[in-house]
Amino acid sequence: MGGGAESDSDVTEGPRHALPRGRVDWALCFYVSSGAPASIRALFSEVVSPRVGCWSTPHFSCLILPSSWPDTMGVTCVSQMPVAEGKSVQQTVELLTRKLEMLGAEKQGTFCVDCETYHTAASTLGSQGQAGKLMYVMHNSEYPLSCFALFENGPCLVADTNFDVLMVKLKGFFQSAKASKIETRGTRYQYCDFLVKVGTVTMGPSARGISVEVEYGPCVVASDCWSLLLEFLQSFLGSHTPGAPAVFGNRHDAVYSPADTMVQYMELFNKIRKQQQVIETRKPNQ
Image (tube, rainbow, N blue to C red):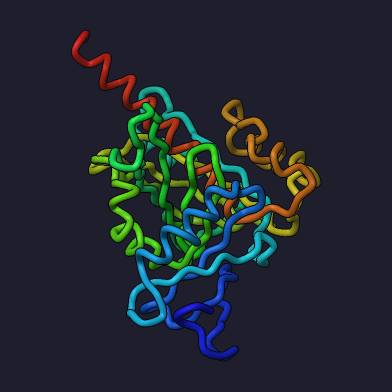
């Protein structure tokens, strides 16, 4: 591994994390998911690596790994639960978790997924009137050693947690959007082969919505188990049961990965942001 790993003993594998771990104080690894355009590879091999580190300085160096790197999970569906009429976000969460407990689900700790938005720096757009692109840097407590970077309408990079430090060094290319931090926190429940996470989505100090994630562990191909997932979702979401996530259609018979779950969370967070923007624009007229 460039700039970090020295032997096989430096590579370890932790729970729900399959990325190589070297001397992480000055090494960064990531891989580009399948279908990444050549421009993305060029960005990291020709622009990022020379600017943020090399063999002779204790910064960061980059290694592009194949998209076949083993990092799988059970098939997962992420959706938004509307706030019940006459109830607050917290009261709705309590109603939902009570339903799960009545089904026999058991608490298995807590979880957190967060997302921060970056936009292309104006200095990199040139004078051709190019539109800037967004990148979402995300973390998931299920994968404490990983960081996910999702490009708008593009690939997903899975990196070491030190990717956040890299973004500081890339401020000439990507800049953090003001007040863009959004996250969901809540309780994990285990019910037979299903892992359920009900979370409160917050932006700043305020609760903005409810997220529901259901993972079916024994299966890694979405088309093989969606009907089973749907039946379980209906058992406690009722009329609010979501349709099949768009990412399922993109994956079809491919092996499901953690990046697919992060794409769903990105879509959920963007949906909640837009809902909040609508609410804010209506306030002056009320």
